[in-house]
Length: 95
Image (cartoon, helix red, strand yellow):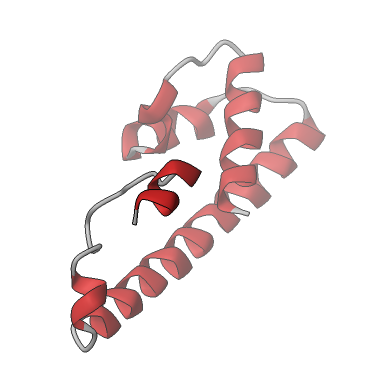
């Protein structure tokens, strides 16, 4: 859901000449996004999405924290904390 909000906000920014990439989510990028002059409906949509974005980000941060806390109690989970791995079907066959 957060990704959809980000994509929609980024498309609003790109359509209005604001190209910031990943820095759009920084504080400076957020101010630049708010400063865009938009049509009334687009402005309302931007305001709604900018209000929703921090709520979704907080929920994700809270879930990440809960997962980290639970991983402390499960030794097997600690092996994977902080490591982003991509598994393929071949990896499953080898194990």
